Image (tube, rainbow, N blue to C red):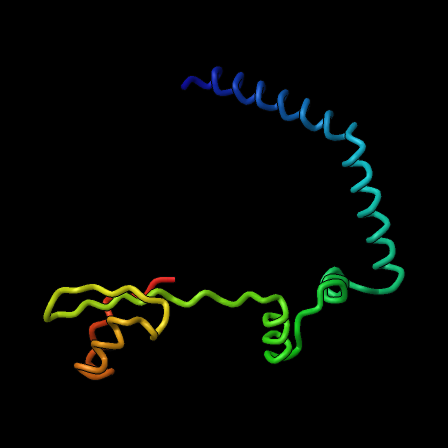
Length: 126
């Protein structure tokens, strides 16, 4: 691309960006957000607080893992178990499970032993 073409293309992009900037400056929502930001910064300065302190105040993290467990239990959701994929080398049969209570997996563990079956683990996925 010639230097002149590159210059003209950049000039056009600059005009488009300037038009977008002008449109944003006249937007009432932006003016409202800017006003909020200025007031918040002046309050932070007045009380000697940093942005990190304000965030910590408004969104406190649980202090202990027990509190985290209690909050998780109260919402009724928990972390999804990982998918484990086992392959029986004798039969080639594949079992995919998210828990240890899978019928075929239990039968294998009864027949071959838990340690042997765990050695058949092919991969673990989220």
